[in-house]
Length: 583
Image (cartoon, rainbow, N blue to C red; front, side):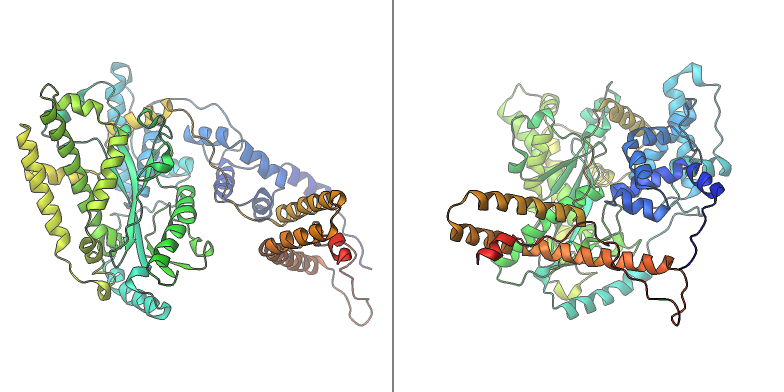
């Protein structure tokens, strides 16, 4: 028998005193948000489960500290000195997150210039007392800022990355092979994309737009929401729009069931499509909706979903449903080949603006005492939701089909419809605006439609940051559901206990036997998952056992037994022993 390994007391002491930096703590929190358990995270980092659990429990305090520009190499939370630079960096983080959400690449020079503008905007807002403060957006500051904000994925380069035309040319050929090998038809190929919408915005030259920008308390964030729009290549099925708003229960929706809205309603403080939001949409809306569509068309439920590399798109969607294959576009090709970006979203936004102006015109014509300004004050998010749904309905099948020309030309019938629709709608908006004595030209409308994709200005970011601070804290995002061996085993144990109670009180053994057998048969799918997880656990423990097993001489040493200690703490659940005996 090999001698026991002596534990070095100095090693033990060093482990106990191991300091964990803010960078590592933030990484643990991010892993937890992706669904990893404390045990899994601890194993990967060499930390105990209790240590990881404590960090996750302290999540809010840690993230608040980091947001306050805490050094990411620090190991303890200390009080940080406030100042314009700290406020500027908070706004800069918000801006970078917004750029990331919209997949807009940034460079050192772009970030440097944005930081300067934000700092100057804050100085103007603070007044005379802050005029003496100075800020130099040096490379040294930028590297420290990256550490403080944990933005290690920012690539510092001379210019921001441009669209990859070569990849955009090659990818359609690869996709064609996937479609051919999978036997997908145009009705089975889908694409979705996120887009921002300022739902309460008029052309800049209207007197209302001018007054709103100078009005005290004007909140740009309240006007902003994110939509997820998409459909199939045949153009005959448009998915129900998903809307992400800042507030879960705005006043305009009081007493209204969100399940009855013509959109899928989601919310978070920044109105972004996060991983959790997308996971929920995919599992609870996309999959069942598309399955019903395929059934109605009498085609197999076999779907190809094409996505870009937005940060809110999980990389593991292929694991969610065996009938849905997910393919991701190459980086920096969205603007060139993603179908929804080839005119559908622009057409939808044009229809939305047309409906808003149409609502205003109808209201002022019906009530001669109602001014456009009065109407605009009453226009709320529920009105916007209804206009969004109606505008999405207006997008024609020919438009939905035509935008696939660059990616899947084999599915396309006509491509002229999309641009014609936008041009026609812009003319209608101008005509209706002039009926209400608004100084609006076609260029103004075009500028407004393009503004939905523009970055937030320094003033917008300041207002949005204030609004986020004022808004009540979001409910904690629940961890994504996932099966665990322990959870499944505990569930089966409870079921077994329940069956035993029925058996003890039921005088009709035949009835009990029939019910118990039916219960266990209906749970067979969960039983298979449990057995798979037990097998994985067994193999993992076996590998760890042989990894730490001392070297032996096969000729002289006995073969060690692995049955001395159970590898699985959760005992297998047998389907009601009493049922078997009664048979």
